[in-house]
Amino acid sequence: MSDDMNEKDGVSDKSPFAGCAILVAALLVMVFLITFSVVVLFRQFNEIAKFTETKPVNVQIESLEDREAELNALAEKIERFRIAVTEGKSAVLELNANEMNLAIATYGAFKEMRGMMRVREITGEQLTFDISFQLNGKPRMAKAGENGMVASDPRYLNGVLITQPGLLNKEVVLRVNDIEVPFADVPRGFIDQMSPYRITEQFVGDTEIGRVMAALTNVELGDGVVRLVREEGKIPEDTVTDAEVDQSSQRLFTFLGIAASIFLFFVAIIIFSGLRAKKRRDAIGNSDESA
Image (cartoon, rainbow, N blue to C red):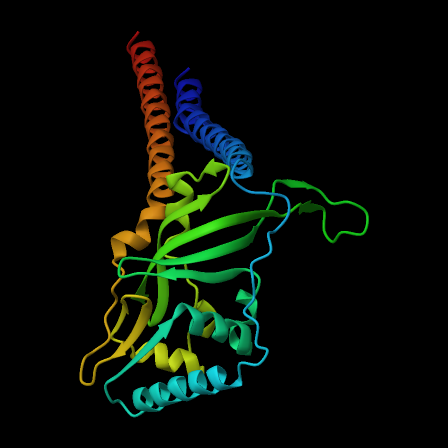
């Protein structure tokens, strides 16, 4: 009888109840997170469709015809600034809307911006662009001739981008204050996700533009101009704060934190229940032995 009881106790001690329950709970939480993510994703695409369009608009590209004098003056201004910055001297490059649009239309480094964005206005408070940004549309099964199993039809954000320039991690970025489209309101959450907009991300690193950007000490707005500033002897610092960068990801981290807390709560309940059940079995076994 004693051997039988010890055998039962051994089985009880190795009961897979708690481990299996934790595994089931983990699988359920994983299924919940995947399902929730898919639902949120499609809901997000539906919301984006409300303020985007199926076709791009024609964002004007600056004409270069009969503008050799302007182009030469712009090239000389940029080159003087580049040389001064490279030599570590103080320098300021002022560009008005016309010059910025000429640069986009002329220089190969900015060709991706052509037809996508154009400087509309510069004031002391904001830098405004006409934009036509291509966004990913709702996922769907790929059609014949398309690569992969899943594809999407693009959506276009056509409107006005209202920004302030700043410095972040040795590059010029844009704080996005607002996005205006003619037929809808753009949700604040979407605007926050776009800010800061890394307009010069492709130049970061060991490129000519990247080296100049890394030496900038400030980017300012004046009456009708953007000023790129290099102050000799001053160490470049970010003018866009970590809080502004992290703002768009706070919701995601909050959601993941809540999901993790829920998961740990259920695991704790399951473990506690398993320990209580084992304790009851041990108590019953001990009472049987006493009898």
